[in-house]
Image (cartoon, rainbow, N blue to C red; front, side):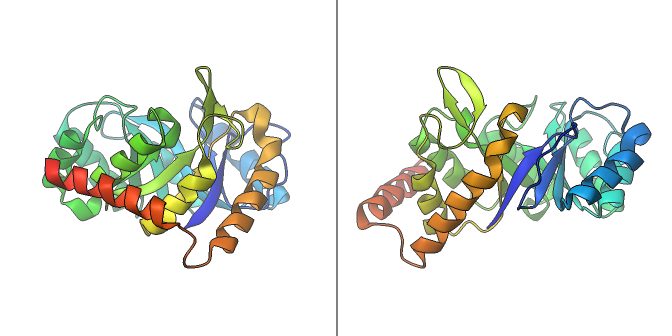
Length: 247
């Protein structure tokens, strides 16, 4: 799996040691600041791995971001479904694919794809191999609930967002909240997840990215091929069995 960090195009971005997701939600005039943004990112030595664009609602929405992705040499955008019409979302996928762009839909945060039944409906419409999803760990009630959700949507998950939460506050660094992210990394290893993992902090915590990435990388390297204990494996097996029995 590749570790990314999510950043907005704001002033005084820190120098980062990992590839980044560029979060352009809330920036409507992309064409105006695109050249300056590209220069700034190059000066920082920042490699962009994907772009997060917010809601896609109608034909033409995906096309608006193609120039940005082309400028950054990126072929993946993470988007929220802004309409609950399967045909329109399928058209948006077609529109993006015309430009060689893959859309990864955020699960559980838009007007559609809020539960597995809607995911299956959409997959049947566009064919499963064309559907990619992004999951937010902190939006589930706890780690077990996230693992269950991950298993339910297995095969579709192309990005997992990591941030912590405390007393209703989201976007905290991963080691400052109620979620045990070292345990989660073990779980993802057991489940053989090899897609993107994105640290997504509030801008005030961007300075924490490099330190937290170093801890995560060291931890993952220490696991090797057999880092999960038998108790954890048994717990995951029970969750998988429960999901399979309910399908």
